[in-house]
Image 1 (cartoon, one colour):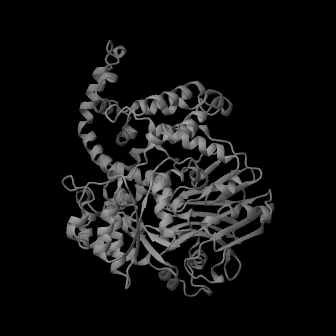
Image 2 (cartoon, rainbow, N blue to C red; image 1 turned 60 degrees about the vertical axis):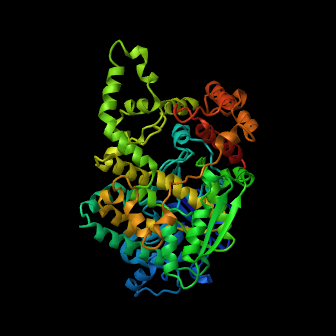
Image 3 (cartoon, one colour; image 1 turned 90 degrees about the horizontal axis):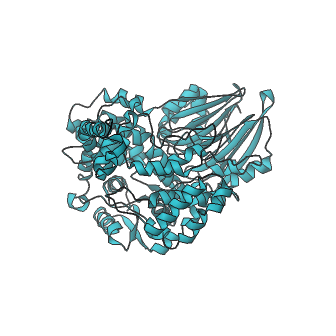
Length: 631
């Protein structure tokens, strides 16, 4: 696990400046660092840099940038190729010097070219320079576990694992891209390929970027919609085959992710996903696996007792830490620096705390991420199923309320909140993303209109690309494309790397993901039982009574914080004069809205007027904007 950065262009960046850029990611790789600059045909120059967190082959032979034996290829790389040992056997004609997976990437490219990425099973962001072809390649893993940004400059590009190295470029303009802000305020994160800055993009998951002779080409080597269609057309024959096949792949995936030359442990919340991953890890270990969980004194958020019970049953070496609200609050100021962009999923705070706890004992931690998206675990999937059943009726209500002569009476606005949501859900490309219309209106209205530019729609208007009639499956695929990489995996990556900790996700193994598409949906959502097949496998390791309980979600008391200890800061950020000078938000509208929220707070779930999340998104952006000037 590391951080990488570099550039290609005719405007040189000095080695000293490249080192400064690289060192902004010291937390991602405190064990080693390397920077090199190469001359390229056509007057171009290439710079590669990496900060290293040593996991495999702790010797100097793992140093990056790494070069092929014939000096044709240079690589900097962040992540893990879990099947590198199998690939190394296929590449036995290459004169390997090290025992690390980075050299396997080089050998694989020399044999298979850019198509080598199709053979990698892992999480990765790779930059590769091929002197023979004069090409620079950027590769990102299939599901987007590892981040990779790039800034399109006039003469080339600058790339990095985080935005901080790009911000450290002396000529970077730091121009906010206002058209992404309404979507950010609504979604609370910025999804690839977009970023918060003009001309800066995230390479999308499952993508390759090639820079050659001044031209940039990008293509997908793994697309969720296409892969789902291919594999779902080959369904497994029975539930027994699905369960045994999935179980075997999960065991293999966990075993591969336990390969490490440094101490390894597991996050354990006591829920199904982390408990299953931990149970398999313990079954593959001769010694007690180190497990970590945090607890909260507020009972409705606290799962520490469940995690402890699972740990005791499995016989792990368990460490738990109870957190005070004050400790959570103290992390708020660090969010802008470590998350690089405005990122307002408040569960990031709990993730940072459990990462900090684990990092005091291990360098690698297994996690259960991906179980909800691939096996139908979120409560929203239940709501989506109900919404599809009511859609025709909702269309009739919407049509009636908008008949000539009735439209002016605004009957639809008077309907109960849940009815209003179903009736107003008329956009065909976002059927599974229904929500409170007034929330959307406010998110759009807050941002100052930019002449000649349209705001991105707050919803993702691309659901038809999946070709799936079942809304529940469609929303799962959409979440795999957006929420999982843009929010969940970003949250875990930044939180863990803040403490130089590598997080590995066995459920997001390539073979597990693709096999999940072969599993009939009825095995995932069986008679209202979400994640049915995954739960059934978990019961093979852990008694049902230790796991079966309502899902508990962690939540920061946003309303309490924003109208309490953060109140004055929020009011300062939303004052008319501050907003007018900032020239990003509609000063009058936003100032009035935030001040009104501070006075009244959330109105309750039945109304849809719960603006603490919107106010929190705004607060996080303003906090980021203020601190960005020093980054």
